[in-house]
Length: 229
Image (cartoon, rainbow, N blue to C red; front, side):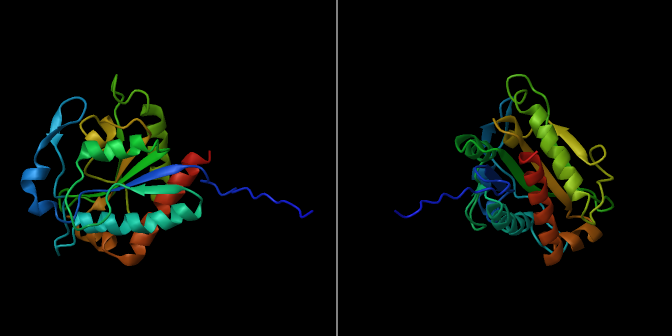
């Protein structure tokens, strides 16, 4: 009789599901009626989505987030994760923030990472990580894990050459109770504001191919560290 062999996938993220949310969408600007429609965010209403920001040279946040997200995906898959994107291209509009949260919930994601870049004052620099506030009936069940995920992402991102934000948040963290993607999530979720697109130095980094690869690797390091700890 032949021998029967079994293989075990011992990659760090084997069996884990990660939802990667590239903020905004490339054609949101052409669908203002649709993206301005109010949706329920758990403790109020907010616009379905926004157009996002851009650098002074016109490089859009939507393109940046789409590019970085698509670098994150194969890196996470190489670690064994099942990875789901909240949008399939950069040529449409939406989905709305409530639907983005629902994607993570429906797929019982282990974590959701939402990728953004800020449109702050031109003299402000740096990144910050947004995590949900501890809101009874909404995020109280994911608050601690989301905060731990935020710390992991913050620590990994510190290894890049992007400084901590000097114009918003506290020590590179922001706690928010007004974001539908966080309020409506049933799984640990954070937003990365990878830098300030309206600042010349930050914009140079965010537009650079090599730095985008560095961002992707920092995100994967954070997810891997959080889920394998």
